Amino acid sequence: MNSVYSIANAFLLVYVGLFPIINPIGGAPIFLGLTRHCTDPERNALAFQVARNSLFLLIGSLLAGSYVLEFFGITVPILRVAGGIIVTATGWTLLQEGAEEDERNAHKPVIPTDAFYPLTMPITVGPGSIAVAVTLGSQRPSGDMNLTTPAGNLTQLALLGGAAIAGVIAIAVTIYVCYRFAEGTVGALGVQGTNVLVRLSAFILFCIGIGIVWNGYSALTALPVSH
Image (cartoon, rainbow, N blue to C red; front, side):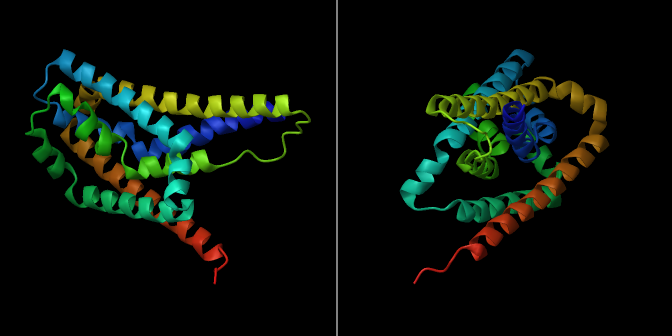
């Protein structure tokens, strides 16, 4: 029972941790604006490519990001502070500009080769999302699994890793669904509703950025000072 709880917790931790920062619902109007000159088949293909690229980026950050940071001598608290500052700045910019920025971007035609930049990165998966994925991947399972054998330990780690990857896959599927049906969603909301959604998403993003910076700062101040 404890094992099932840990697996479910790993899945939810990844999905719930990434969802508000990636915010595919709030990103749908931006995606639609950037692809307004595309045909429906082209837009659908771009939605799939963005979801696929996001999946690879997030899995790479989740599994190998902490080792890359260790290689360059960057600690997770520093990453949190840096990523949080970027997230905060992005949220503040979107909060100030709102739908006007989306309208300006909507006049920029997009071709299928733009699926990675800018549609995937930084619009969908930005520095903040990568920072969160790296932070989540750097977490180690707690020692309350009551495992008595190395084989059981490896099995449990594999299950936890699979649950975390399943959370990333669920995020990618959510991105695809939101982008694939962005036209219908935005049409239902209308111009005013879309503007409210974008600004609300920007405010949430700003608050999340402040929280990430605070957590990173708290972790840094708690570290012992080396002489």
